[in-house]
Amino acid sequence: MTQMKLLMTLMGLALVLGACSPAGDDAGAAGDTAASNAQAADAIAPGAEGAAAQLAGSTRHGEWASIPVAGGDSVRAWVVYPERPDPAPVVVVIHEIFGLTTWVRSVADQLAAEGYIAIAPDLLSGHSMPMAPDSFMAAEGGIDSAIAMVSRLDQDEVMTRIGAVGEWGLALPPAADTWGVVGFCWGGTTVLAAAALIPGLDASVAYYGGIQQDEADLSRTTVPTLALYGGDDARVNATRSYVEESFRAAGVAFESETYEGAGHGFLRQQTGQDGANAHAAAAAWPRMLGWFERYL
Image (cartoon, rainbow, N blue to C red; front, side, top):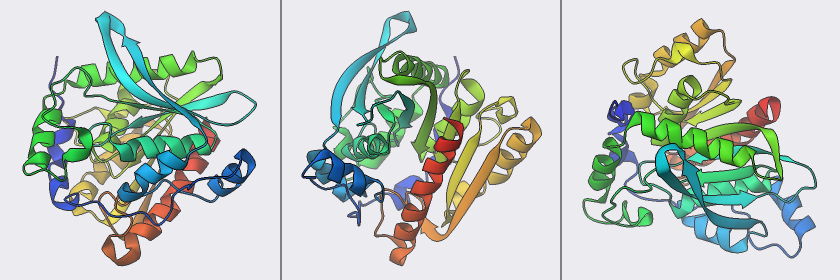
C-alpha cells in the first residue's frame, strides 16, 4: 500500500487558507419549495462564513449516513437529496484537508438544490482527529495538524472509499445510473487521481487541484474532467502541464478554466483577492454545472 502522496504538492495551501471569508451568496430561508428552487437556479455555493446559514435555511432533506466499504471499513457521510420527481444523478463531494466541514456540507446542499443527490464523505472516518473539522483554521497549529493528518492517508484506501460511496449512492432508490465527483484543493487533487484510478466514474470536476506524475498516472483515465484554477495560484498552476498533457494523451474529454486574479480556495474565500475570488466563484459554479449536465 502506498502513502497518500497527493497532499505533498499542496502544503502551500496553509498560506492561502489561513482565514475564512464571508459569502456574497447563499440560499437563505425560503417560504416554500417553489420559491426556494427558483432562487437556487441563480445561486452558487456560499463562502465559508455563509455555510451555516445555507444549511439552516435549506428546504432539502439532509442526513448522516454510514456507508459500508469492503473489508469491514465504513465512511461517515452527509447526504442531501434534491427536490425533483425523477431519478437524480449522484455527485460525491471531496473535502479539503480539513475534513468534512460545515462549508463542504453547504456545497453538497447547493448541489442538491441544482438537482443532484450530493454525498460528502468524511475521508478521515476512523482516523484520530485532534479537533473538529471547523476548528482547524482557527486553532493555533490547526493547519499543521490537518496537513499531518491527511498526509498519513493511504491513496488506495481513499480511492476505495470514494468508489464505495459512489456505488452506495447509485443504489439509492431515487438515484439515476450516473455519478460524478467534485473536489476542492486536496479534494481537487484527489479528484484528478480518481479520474484515473476509480472505474465506472462518469465525470469529474477539480477545483484548484494540483498533481504530479509520481502521485498518479493520469494517462490511465477514461473520465471526462473539468479543471478550474485561480490565476494567482502559481503553486498549483505549476502542475497543470502534466495534467493537460496526460488527458490529451489519453484521448479523454478535458477542459480547464483559469480565473485571472483569483487565489487558491476561491469558492470558500469569496471575498478575497479584491473581488477576483467572487468573480471566479460566480463563473466557476455554472461552468461545473454545465459539465455535469453534459456527462451525468
